[in-house]
Image (cartoon, rainbow, N blue to C red):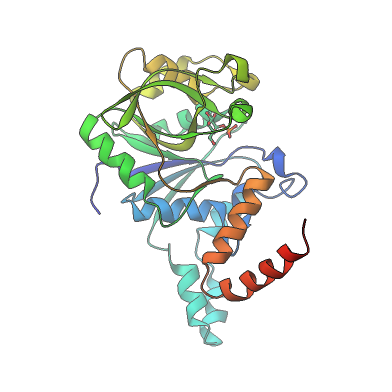
Length: 290
Ligand code: G1P
């Protein structure tokens, strides 16, 4: 699929505190759902929607991400000599893909992570993919967002309705329905429920234009003392339209333990090799629960 959006930034420098101790020395982006790390789901989703190049923002303890997308000579030879061709094919599936890595020296927030990618983006629109939001692999969310971008030529962000009690975990928008999307009027990062403009939460898929960088350069720290992408978008929307797209498929917040478990169960049930036995186990297990 040919699209105007060729590059994706994948921020992966966060400390992953919600999954400690698992993430003390290894990246949360490498936590597996069934047999693939979170970040690989994000990369495969993007490739299926026409993205060709990836800029991964890393930090301390994130070397495993680079190794994961690199070739693994010894392992490949071993798989070849033992005739494990299916596994060989699986580990080489992304060998043609271009990855660039930028190290964010201090975890100053999502907005700062995006700014680190500026030298690699040139003057073109790009996607931002947060790998702890896992989108059902059968649902082409990015494709739908790119179509809207191509029509409007303005930034597009993914939205989902969340319970009011959870708005303080997200960027929340104030938007007006217009032509099948939301025209964003304002947004706020992690508001208290009583102060929230709505329950429309920003989900980790964005199509952005390079004018965000100039704003990020001047952006002061916001919620949690971090340089927030939401705060920069809030300023951008005063100058240029931004559209919100309500997602139509399933999204898992795999940065949260319950969301991670739900993603694991659902994706295991979709896995051809596992689904039969796993379903039997779940049915038996459910009988013992009240
Ligand atoms: C980030 C963004 C937030 C967005 C969320 C989506 O927050 O800052 O606006 O709603 O991703 O997952 P984080 O989850 O990194 O705290």
